Length: 412
Image 1 (tube, rainbow, N blue to C red):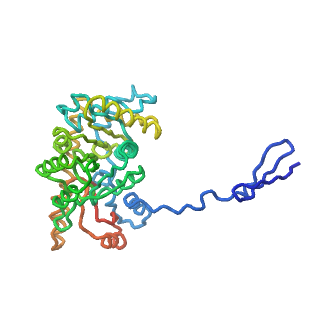
Image 2 (tube, one colour; image 1 turned 30 degrees about the vertical axis):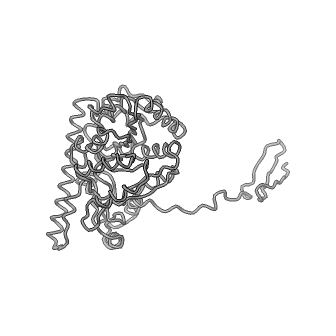
Image 3 (cartoon, helix red, strand yellow; image 1 turned 180 degrees about the vertical axis):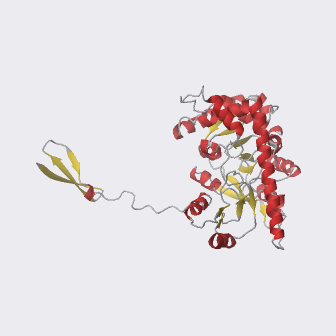
């Protein structure tokens, strides 16, 4: 036998059936939606391109929006150095937790790759370091660190930049400003506008800099401009945060691509660097990266690292282990490291060849526009100069999928 009871909760009447044996049974028909106020979130402007591409039925469709290296057939690439590392760890790999800060040896190899083995802050033990969930995870860790321990400090992002930068720091509760970076007429760095904007930023502001192969423009400051920026940062007491997602993809040389980071470290800046192995090691789904912070001394580094670990503990407790073991093998073994560096150089050279081929083909097709920026820009992406309307037309009429800002991947 069942008897009915009712109760009022949050203004809604829910029916409860109580069986003869005392078991409670809730009537689902009386339940109201908990999340009926939610709106459907818009598609991500980058990842949404691939979603639209997959849904398209046109057999001639082309996806130029994917931010991943592809072979000549448009297929994902697993580097030979990574395949060999996978075989080597197969017999020693386990599934245990690693410390909150991640695999220490992996972190040490990562900061060595970024700053160079002769870097004074490394030798002096004043670099805090944590394994992170790729570049996005590194940036979010630092964003949360800013929110907690740098209250009121804003971050300045280049305009344009990777769209997720705004999401990451906004979600962390950090105030976001922008600074001029790209000149649409020259299709290169607007260095005067950049310096003018940063000169007016409040002292102590954090400024995000793309270490190399700027996304989406493919336009980087030259060596002299980096030196001028270093001097400006010292004068204005600005804190540089380097996003180093493409080390090796700009020039094919990982040391050369680390020029800006190493310059700022050598000239005494306190700074932070976010590294990712998604692109240059092809470990996209492994979510492996490193966050490092150059501090004044070892004691400050220990305190900064402890607070970053505190943030990580509340977010995910322990980072993934597999990607760290792979990257550690590649970076730490002389033969695998040499193979990997040659593969990185090969990917960068192929991208440069793709740029030259595209520019030549446009000229062959009779285009009278100046496409020299295709070959003068570097890295994985080309900032074509196409308007949102032109980009939409390519997608609508020709099934060529790209982001609306005209960015196309040169790595497919």
